[in-house]
Image 1 (cartoon, rainbow, N blue to C red):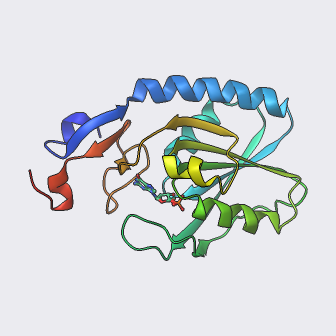
Image 2: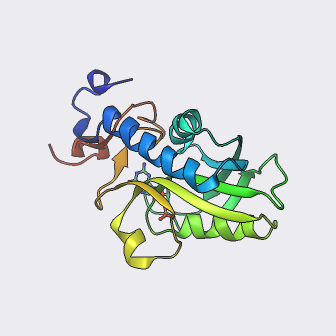
Length: 187
Ligand code: 5GP
């Protein structure tokens, strides 16, 4: 899926596939330096972080295991409430292990702070967080310390590179915004 498949639905590209690739290479280097060869468990939250996990994992030299959680937020529309239900739990026992959560986007930080608390209760050695995107509210509220951020974006709703609108657009290799007609707005 690429720009040509978007027709009139795309408003603009915010971060190109090339920029994502270059930034993830930089972050992977920093992350490798930090872990210094010690094994980690990458924890991805389905479904938004699938692309980031796949690309980051392929760039890291740190020995790693990939595991996944699926959660459902009780939020309405495009905002999360932070009240989360686990639909699929981790397969791995993470006690005593070093965990790197790979997030798609941190907005209010409610989802992430719930996740950190949940994983913390399982007795890992350490929990670190990498997110592809961070919105201004996450910086203002500082609910959770994010260790590695690929890109800061504005308040606008973004899609692509794993992120959806009504389950569409996850397959796009870039991050962008949607034209208002997609949301039923004016042209
Ligand atoms: P938070 O709990 O930090 O407010 O929200 C995080 C979750 O809300 C993300 O994992 C994502 O599912 C969703 N989300 C927040 N902002 C956006 C956005 O701009 N685009 C998309 N597609 N999802 C978003």
